[in-house]
Amino acid sequence: MKQSLANVGCLAVDVFTTGQRDGARRTLILLLTCSVSSLLLSGLLLLYLLYTLDYETTVAGGITGGFGTLLTVALFSSKRVRCLGTLFVISIFMKKSRNLLLTAGTSLVVLRNIRNTLDNLAGLLRSMICNLKAKKSAIAAPFSNYVKMLKWIGHMLKGITDLGVVKFDSQLKVSPRLESEKFREKLVEAELRLNETVKYAQSLVRTVSSVTDRMFPAVSFLVLMLFIALHIKRYCGDLRYENRFISGRFVRFDERQKAEAKPHVLPLTPEERKLYTAIPSARPTSRESRAVMKFGVSVVVHFVAWVIFITVDALLYCCVDIVTTKLSELEPFHVPLLMSIKGIATLIGIPFSEENHRKDFSYSVTLFEKECLPKPKLLLHNSIVPLAVILLVLLAMTLAAAKMSQLRLLVCERFFSDAAEARVEHLHARILRKRSKGRREGNGCSITSLIVKTQSLLIESNRAGRVPHHRVHCQRAEEAVRQLEDERASCDSHAATDPCGNLISSHYVSTGPVA
Image (cartoon, rainbow, N blue to C red; front, side, top):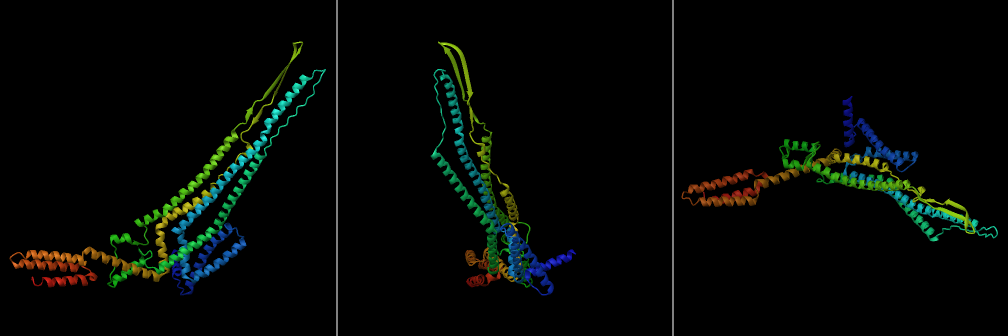
């Protein structure tokens, strides 16, 4: 059973990548594979329409059904569309998707946390205006106590002036009045400006948030598709584009070259292994480690920025909450106001009665009205939970960033075999050229080095000619010729045919008379 499932899976991958529909079985497998792929992508579109754009179920279902049908037909008909869809799934873990996720996280933090910060600031300002209004009416309470006190004093004095024979009738009328038209206008103007500013900021944030939530996935999808199409175009048209990987196709090509007695490059030298990476490989190379670090730097920078925004929002909430708590704990200020009147009745200077009148007119004043205390909000779960999901995805992408480029190239190699073969031949020829160039430079077969060596050998031979016996001179010349022949034999065929041969023949002519 497992073997049959594995065979069906391999056949499905082969049909999906090559597009060869030789029989009814392969055609049916390709149709089923395309249908399943379009069903998955249509499901994502349905979720986007229902929960992001708030479409009705019937409308979203109709759009999704039409999209799924068209996508199935396109996948079944075109190999480029199948490659585009496969690379779209893979590109979720690539650099462009990382940038899109970072942008989404930044928009999420800025919109939600800044909106909450603005709401808390607006609530704080509203509480201050409310307290000023409350204080305007609260100021009248102490004055009413003073009015009562004056009336009581007047009533007490009225009893004193009532002599029985002559009666003094007086009326004390006191009414407090606290009116300040300018103060009232300032309060109304401040409240209007605050409401206008808050409404403008909230509408702006709401508009940006709505547009971002609705348009960002669609724009991200289009941008990602554009980059994938550009990658496919460069892969098929530019032989040098990311052509530095040794794949299985390259190994098979080099084995054919070796079997045909043609130049081959495998195994690679240690220097070449640093330049050209074998794929697929589980062990990360130094270049891949640098790619992972480069991939993760921007993630760390954005994470720090997100933490700063969330921290500012949380600190503002803490400050407002602490102020609210402390103000609510304050007891009202008690102002003691006690009045006492002592009356002594005398007759011909002799006191015969004494009366004491005492009344309490004390009152209390609150520093901040409790109904005007601000009520801050802290909605961390609205931003932290989505950010945690984004950070987990980014962490997985960072760990897999080094291998995703290899997987993307392997997918393109499976879909476009002709272009992959041309890229293999180009890379093989490039390695041969670099190796031949390095061998020529390493062996010293350049024209300049041979001329210098020949001149030094001739000078040494001429110095040997000072010896009386002419055989020593001949031996020196023969040794020089043999050294040049050894140099010529060490050169490769491309470099030795013209430069080294001409030099050696000219040296034979120059040393002939000496022999």
